Length: 279
Image (cartoon, rainbow, N blue to C red; front, side, top):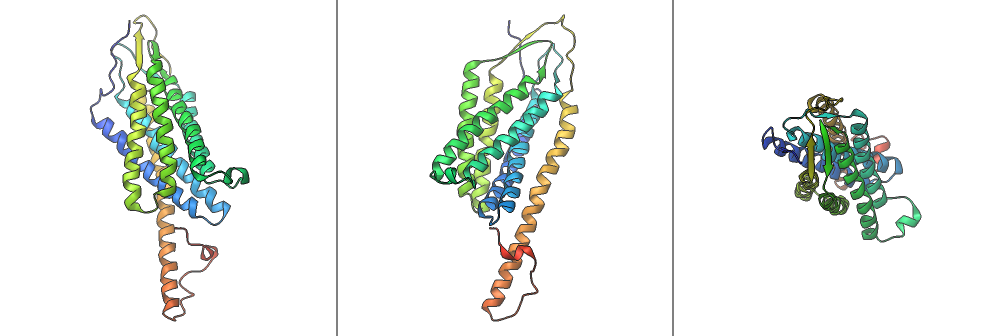
């Protein structure tokens, strides 16, 4: 017999925090993806794409998932999390996002020969299945006193949401050039990621066995504390890089303006970054 399951045991603020975390991670990721699309060198493109994957996959998807899990409670059962499967889930989230972004913005000739929309669709489908895999590998890490099952219909619905969300995310990574566009784009992406999570959670059925021993593993708070610290660090790297890139762009624009006015401002900026202004 299925046992009662709570998804907001700590209050609705957990849902709000999960959504905000996802939207912020997606915004940073979209900003990095735009830098990658405009990069002149493969090294710069790879660097920005990796930061985009860490922001979207590591923060916007994975950290959001485990913040949302703070509200998960099964009365009458202790809940623990397997560390190995949890680490696998974060690796899946980042790798899936990175793979999808690289398909869209690739150096491989036979892929570049495809229309951009086709690459977005292919990358989105692969990324969507992998992101859903991240969610369910994260759920496989859950340990309860009894059995935990997933409803097939809810699994299918969450995978569909993941695919649609991934296609939209990859498309937005190509078109969201200005902050005024990236902000609502990140808000939509955050909604999609949260929808995938809670659709999957709605299909959970738990059978509690009071005689079963307490499960082994980590508590959600023990898991989340280092996860949140790492998430903040993951966001700090692209944010600092974006700020530094913006400063470099401002210096280059000042130099160009000075040249239009007939002034010598070669001292404004020098070095390898002079070759390229990443927009």
